[in-house]
Amino acid sequence: MPAESTASPTAGLSRRSMLAGAAAVAGSAAALTASGAEAAPLSAGTAAAPSAADRITEQPDRTGGHARATVFKNVRPYGAKHPVDLTVVDGVVSGDPAPRGAKVVDCKGRIALPTLVDAHIHPDKTAWGEPWVTRNPASSIAEYTEEDVKLYHALRTPLKKRAERLMGHAVAQGTRAMRAHVDVAPAYDLVGVEGVGSARRALRHALDVEIVAFPQHGVIRTPGTKELLEEAARTGAIDRVGGIDPIGFDEALEEHLDVVFGIADRHGVGVDIHLHERAATGMESLRAIIARTRALSLQGKVTVSHVFCVPGLPERELNRLAADLADAGISLTTVAPSSDLVLPIDRLREHGVEVGLGSDGVRDSWSPFGNADMLHRSHLLAWVRDARLDEELEAAFRAGADGGARLLGLPEADLKPGSPADFLLVRGECLPQVVVDLPRREMVVRGGRIVARDGELVGH
Image (tube, rainbow, N blue to C red; front, side, top):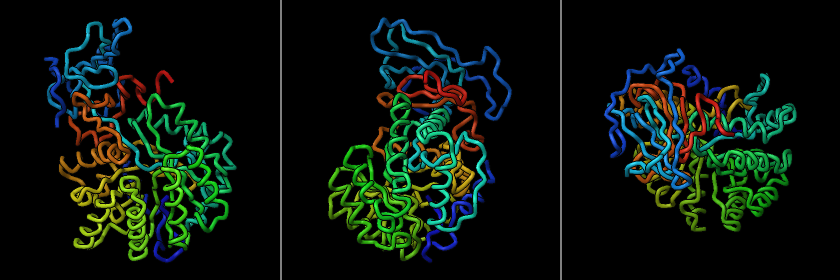
């Protein structure tokens, strides 16, 4: 999680300072069958309850146990001017006429948008839904990790319940998948991995989850950690093994990477390393990660998160680095913490580097902020990038939806025939306005099934 390191390359950096500025702000789709009905004017920010005639309504299907089919009538994909009927068969958007007896959901002209992907979140640490936590001063990774342990012991709700609560909330706000970084250290053993794994199983109908065993306390500086990482990978409990600031925090570049990449190579898991190091220190670590990825033929299985050494690079150096990252199949993630630390997503994408967007920590010991709402995180990305134009606002949304999907190897939910029927419904005029106004998620659909309404899970 982004905070200042104990070493000078990251001096002056903390989540509190990074979030201070951002916290002050709170294409038409597919060849689908036109419904012929015009969308009623909708106000995205209205707080008034809709009238009975304006509520999204459902009719049961009578397909007799054949293909599971639903017609979502009167939706406006990506804010299209004219509503269409979106037909879903067995969880996939269909371009064919709806089967006889399909269930019908009248969406009353709501905008349909793909659900989003949280490429970097820490659900094990959260105090979301708990009594207010008064945080203590901290200014280094070591101090923050001490606060993590104190909060872990102070919270009365078991970790697995807190994680499931937060992850369920993310679903209700329109998240369809996440990469969950879970602390692994002798202070916790593998409780976090087990707890988030339990939450993943409970929410499997609504949410795809990758679990990263994250050595927040360091791989080398904290004895016993590498053995826990090994056990988590050996038992199949995790999808990736993590790392953190090999030079600035763990102070053992080669040994750190030996452990992390060795576990990945032995057990066939991916890698996702937190890299807060800046300037030359960060570039040294990043170049070493690229070299290890190539040497072990782990192309496409390595991600580096935060990567604060990349923003601000001269154009020629950025181009050269991006080409090397793309060649090694290394992806990156950002949490859009501030204008000077957000990754240059567009430039990286031009070179073929996948970049995902994440929400990072949520109401944990590091910060009282965060809400696991990826539409809001897209809003913050647009804010810190000083977006003004419609295409810039749309690009921020697509970073949260399409960028994360590519990073996790998921099909893009573009609402076209053949795509997964994963979408959310909101009131609004157009996609750029939705990114700015953040309307209530009135419905969330996963694989053609309604999994949330008005911010609450259904059928769970």
